Image (cartoon, rainbow, N blue to C red; front, top):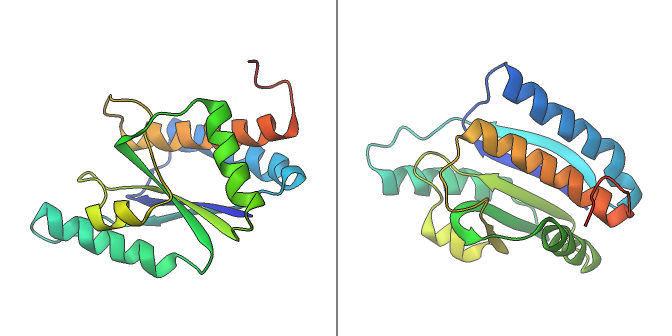
Length: 160
């Protein structure tokens, strides 16, 4: 299953980008053994529409245009479900085992995700009730995707 990250906003050069890339590189190496192919990160610029609802709709439309047939969608959302790393990896494995061709994990813009898009998603995922800067969310997502691959491989990186 192809795994790709979709992010509203660009991550500038710096330590956060380097750390995220380190985990994405690890995912790219570890993933194929468990049927996960890392397809990269797609960044889109934030919408310039004047109102928040309009910005969310426009950003959602850009994401929909990228979604292919048979792809699963996980939106990172502060109102989403907070899962353990084991549960997160199990969800990914279930999507893979159900024959989903791809998985897109989307980090929204400052206004969040469009409610209509959220209703279409396979999962709304939260990294907790706290508000996180997008740079750190990208690092945390990269690490959790790598951790999921290692959990699925039975690697001792993750200690339960």
